[in-house]
Amino acid sequence: MTRLSPDLDLNKTGLKNRTEVTMFILMGFTDDFDMQVVLFLLFLAIYLFTLIGNLGLVVLVIADARLHNPMYYFLSVLSFLDACYSTVVTPKMLINFLAEDKSISLIGCATQMFLFVTLGTTEGFLLAAMAYDRYVAIYNPLLYSVSMSPGVYVPLIVASYVAGVAEGTIHTVATFSLSFCSSNEIRHVFCDIPPLLAISCSDTEINQLLLFYTVGSIEMFTILIVLVSYGFILLAILKMRSAEGRRKVFSTCGSHLTGVTIYYGTILFIYVRPNSSYDSNHGMIVSIFYTIVIPMLNPIIYSLRNKDVKEAMKKLLREAGNSSIFLELRKTRIV
Image (tube, rainbow, N blue to C red; front, top):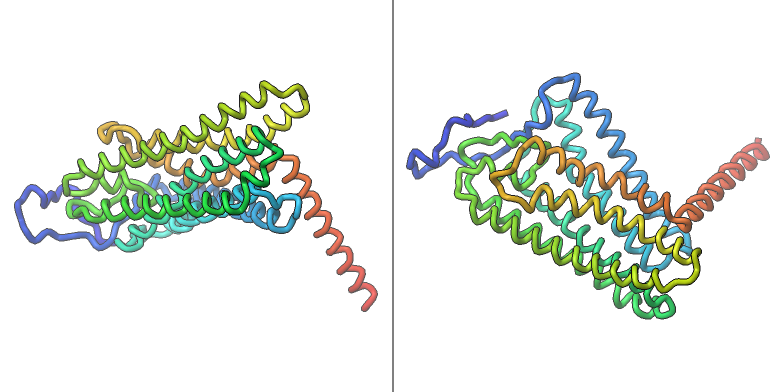
């Protein structure tokens, strides 16, 4: 591993030929090997659960005809995003827990940043689109299939991805246009924006403002869509006379609202605040929460409280069980 001394500040020496880093070192949580083994096992379990839960939901939506409607198409896209989101960060982190060499190349770091910013931003817009979908379904259910036709929900999904790619490109280009010459040690488990700005020897004021205003604007816009959508949903609930209808609406919307609150809350905490108040340890923990823990929680949030998903799961398990019994019977007859 090539380490640059933290005490070497070439920005202050006036030298024109500055030694630029070609790789970074992800310092992680701790140097204690026993603790690293414990963290490796913990995050490996979380990662496996995340992949099984999210990709399982995608398979469920594809396999069960009852789930072939916009609400579950959005949910399957969200699950796929979460699986990818966790995969961008977790495998490298798991390797670093056990490896002596914790380095990551400049290109690798830039790629990781681009992907997690893209996927994170896409998820934010997708959650807003899902809130709008719930509003359309509950406020005017008779026209739901018309109001949320493929001509509507497909562009919403595509627009979410386009916004994510744009945001990822802006921040990756802005961050890696800076000079990194005083230190190459990132006090984090992956290439997040704030810790990279913290070790740059360039003036990062513009980058900090860009981060604050772009993330703040996106959060305000998407949260406004969510609040307006749920405001109309609340009005629709108040007009309902059926207790069963209200219970079903709360069951459907409660899971989405829980996911939205957890996701937006952590994003606002880590990015929309003054750089002077940034603490690397707190930032690392919160970043781990929204990139690794939330993708694990989403399948639980969206499936345990959803009757259709639970029924589809039971049906799939029954069919799998029947197939296994059928194969065993065939083997017995052949023998």
